[in-house]
Image (cartoon, helix red, strand yellow):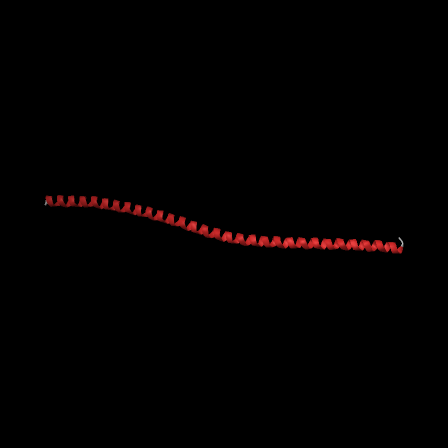
Length: 112
C-alpha cells in the first residue's frame, strides 16, 4: 500500500510539474502571438496612414489647382478692369482737351 501511495504521489508531482511547464509554454505562446498581432496592426496602421495622406494630398492638390485657376481668372478680370480704366481716362483726357480747345476758340470769338 505504501508503494502505491508513493507511486501516486510521484505521478501527481510529475503531472504538477508538467502542468506548470505546459501553462508556461502556453503563456509564452500567447505573448508571442500578441506581439505578432501588434506588429501586424502597427504595419497596417502605417499603410492606412500613408494611403490617407496620399488621398489628402491629392485632395489638397485638386483644391490648390482650383484656387490657382480662380486666381488666374481674378487676375485676368483685374487686368481687363485696369485696361477699361485706362481707356476711360484716355477718353476723359481727350474730352478735356476738346473742351479746352472749344473754350479757347470761344474766348477768341467773344473777345476775351
